[in-house]
Image (cartoon, rainbow, N blue to C red):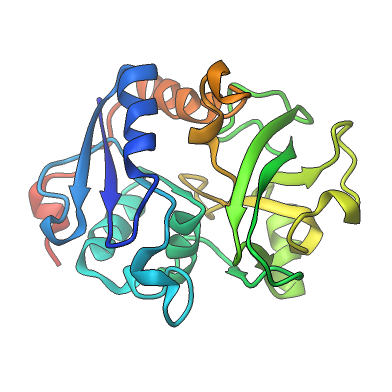
Length: 243
C-alpha cells in the first residue's frame, strides 16, 4: 500500500501529513512535487493544507489547474481515494472533485482553534471507524473555509448521505454558535458522488496523536487504510495516467 502527499508551492502541512501516514500509521508515503506528477501508482492521494500560490485569485484556484490535478482526477475517476484537507479541500473543489465551494468566512478573518465535528456518515472509506453521530475534536485554520452550494446541491448531498462532518458543539448540537465560519448547514466535510473523495476544512493530521491534544482525527487515515485492505488496491497503471 502506498500513499502520495502532493506538494504545491505554498503547501505547509505536507510533512505533517506524511509523518502521520508513515510514522503513526505505518504506510509507505511519498511526498510528490506537483511538477513531477504521479510518476508511480498510488492507492490514495492526499492534498494537504497550506496556502498554495498564496491563495491568489481564490484559495486553491491556481493549484487546481496544474497538470498533476488532471492525473488526480483520473485517479479519482478510477475509484482511487483522494483526501483534501483545508487548502487541499479548496483545491479539490476548484478542480471539480466535489460539489460546492469553500469561500471567505462569514466573519472575514483567519480562524485557528479547535472545533467539534459530528460524524454524519460512518459508511464511507474515510469515516468507517467512527460511529454515526460521534463527536470529535479537530482544529481548523483558515480564512476561506465557509462551505456554500446551491439549495438543490445541498438537498442532493443530504439525500445521498454525502455530508461527512458538520460543525457542532461538544454535545453534537449543530447550532449557529458552533459554526465557526458560517458554512451552509454547518457543513465541514463532503464526499464526492462515488464516495471516494473527501474534502474537509478541519485538519485531522493535527489531531492524530495524544501529544497534540486530540487523536480524534487518526481514524480518518486508518479508515482509508482499512478500506484499501478490505477492498483491494486500486492502483492505476502508467497508461491510465496518460491524457
